[in-house]
Image (cartoon, rainbow, N blue to C red):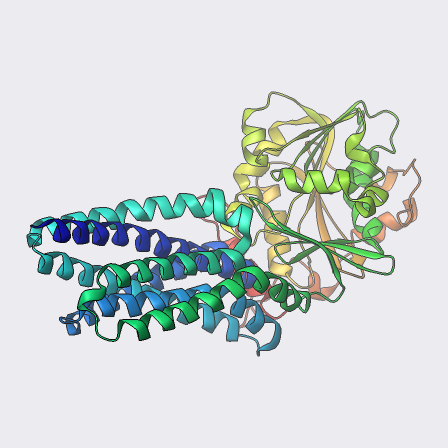
Length: 516
């Protein structure tokens, strides 16, 4: 090969690697978008991967129709990836805010399939062009595929460690679209001598570049206004941490925290939730000195625990350091949690709750499990028999645990499945629930190594809602929230414990909340 052919072949190999990086970033970006907006991360990532690979297969098949004008075909495919992929996140938030229910899911699946198909067309075209230049077919195929696979690894790492945490989902899409466009323009320039109407293609590419740059610098602000419509109150803080989307809203005195779109608390009525979560086990435990809180990174559960003078140490385990930082720095949250996480008695550990219990040798008088609902695989493991067995193994005799367990009204089968799972570890349990206006009716499972009798339990600290007389009402459930679950044919449903091997709670949870 002459010098020009060598240079062109190198450009093709580099192009295949870079577009592969962009392709894998778009693939995982669509999975993240689906997970955030539609829920059930495992389901969304599974569908995304499946649709993207299917699209690649379709694209590879269609590539047989492109045997001539390979370079300009590649350039226009990159134009398509750049504009469609670049605006994907931006338009997703717009559709979620304004379009009818279900449109957002259809849109993300179509976009995933489309970008997958365009990516599938790219590689065969590049291989044919490398062969046309003079590289033997075996070498051209192997080298382009190597660039593609290596680019896939690099793209995945870049998304996880750079793009998502530092740029967010909207800017990431526009930025990656700009990279695709840049590749197209470089290839267009280097092969300009064999392209008819070069100037026309260049002008169109420049126009796409202007649109992408406008989106890169101004799209996030517009998407923010779209996302604002998903929340009933004005957003005052929004960040994408390594683990979740954190949103704070405020309307008058009502401050609300959302994690990945799910409401965690409202300052108007959070006392009803947190008092039932904390005070029954604290009042029941014989010596509530050493306390473990799993979750509760907002610091409100710790605030309630600190009302007890006999408490010597609180260990709070929350995976996300960003929520801890927010709880310790945001003035509205500091007013709500009363600076609890800054107290000397409180020791915060940013660890996975399951792994923490596996590795610690500590025993605790009270364990409070204040974790998000089990709406994905990562959270489901914290609602399994294996996890509650770890809770049991670290609970002192005479101690008590309290577990938030979603709503027995909205998700009746989910609540009683959690209850059954806790009981399957051999712990004695008591079921409680309370009305929280911002949440609805919410359920808890109290557990102890010994039989639980709340009739003699007395609240000795100041509360806004909970009294000794209210306890009996908390343990009484109505017919529409009772553990005798009636199936479609009128028969009673046999509930099974949720386990790591059979994580059926996710399916039950998704089915229960689909109408709310």
